[in-house]
Length: 148
Image (cartoon, rainbow, N blue to C red; front, side, top):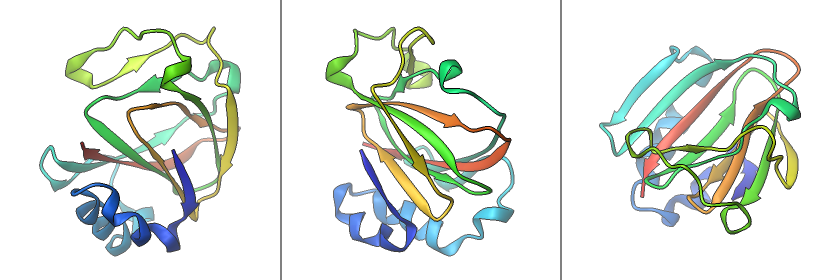
């Protein structure tokens, strides 16, 4: 997991061969005006999901993992709290291949929580269980999906 300022995003380009496309999209887009839904970048290799998340308490947040994609998550219209638990501390998930996701129930709380400001980003790798979208108010966010 990485938490950093958007101004430092380019420093992480070498972490994955597909990061350059994701970073170029993030840095050259007006994130606040992107339409909700899927925004194409490079087919299924790199794409962005723009969403509006509704208020959610920590107790309602579900940990999730992905195996085929890395998430670059950016809150756009406000701050967001996210939960984190390393995958090796989680039970074997019921993974759904078609969705590239495993969701845990609300009875399994994240180990740690942290605040992400709208000038920051978080990168979640397959080994990172994460519980995003914890917020007292609705907010717009972007999740750029980068194929492994």
